[in-house]
Image (cartoon, rainbow, N blue to C red; front, side, top):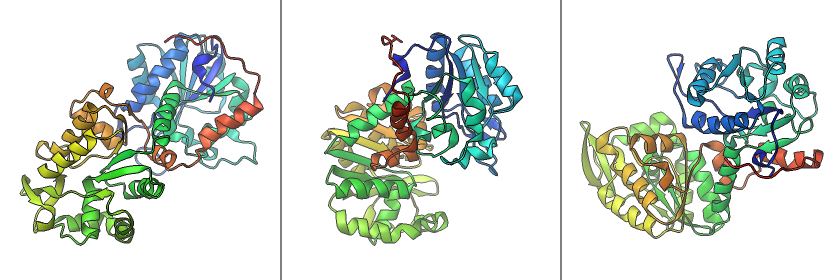
Length: 407
């Protein structure tokens, strides 16, 4: 994988595909870890004299968060403490003029690439509108986000045959971290949250390949699996029904039948009864909602974590936003931070929990900025954005590396 770190960028016009997609509340974006991370790559390229053109998306057509990137550009300006220009255009004359007018070290954010129909309807057989208009204006293309690498979109894969392409610092770090896990044959997984499809996909792959030591189940996933095992889940049944998770019961039963010995369920839970925590054994639940794993389960999971050599954690153990029900999430995160194993943590809620609970990310092996792409890569799938980088080296083999630049 060619890394932009190793190449001279001074005076070069570089398109950088990042992932600035952020939560939106009442039309206002909320700063995300992704923006801060990508700001480092943008700063590095700018500092080294590149003319940086930022490509990104926000939301989906028809959704309330489908908005312009003007706020994102302002936030980047505040983070970088450096002029960041914005143009409310992507491929029109305004955008082209702004790109052509860039000076060394300047940063320009183009508007939401998903405003273009061709972005999400990319075809390798048809000249792409985004690429046709923008490729002649650039020297290099950099993809810096694993979180978009699983998408066959024009701003992700379209420049492959037109420009030399490179991995950005953030993407390279993510690939290095995930590769450590993919080459391990003794991984402890800790799954929580409510993204059942993702968790099941990893469980099936890694348990079938006999490369997972155990899967420690928490969160909404544990509620589903406890129910599939035949336990009463009290008031949480309504949650399973209303969220559509009951449709996963057959798959949950099949997983437990095939890999029951390696899928570890909570022996007790933290119930919410009148918004107060009550400990209860998993086989004795009559009322209340399951909002956390119980204290006995916490102790057992912490011990298993301490004996692990490689750990993947995705999803919180409970309703960590409420202090009474943050015990499980906090204890497991602390155990992962304290152990000697290499750890890979992913998922938006996991990152939010780390930040809310005040745990320094430096104590983890790597905290991924990706969600779905991370899951697909862990499952061994080929990601279009990564395949593009490999193919690009064949199209542009004579791009010579310079001496590595120190950050």
